[in-house]
Image: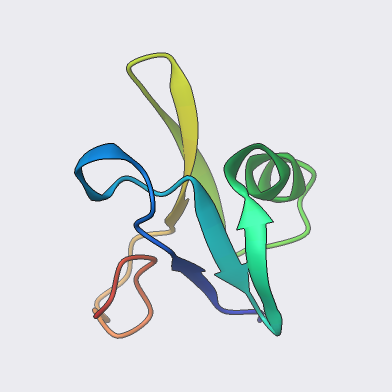
Amino acid sequence: MTQIRGNKDGPNGRNESYRIGDRKHVSRPQAVKEVEAGKHPGAHTVKIEGKKYVRDNPDSSKRDNVNQR
């Protein structure tokens, strides 16, 4: 499964872009589109203040979270 990491490059640390696999800058709308198309089965989208963001599916591991440091 391809790892997705948030770049925390938006206001208040929100993710306006993501690192997906070896792609270092995937825009938030493109990442959302890919997740909703089923290209990343370990992730889903959430809508916050009218914008969709990518999130990891819940599990017991913290190391694979989108905003892991």
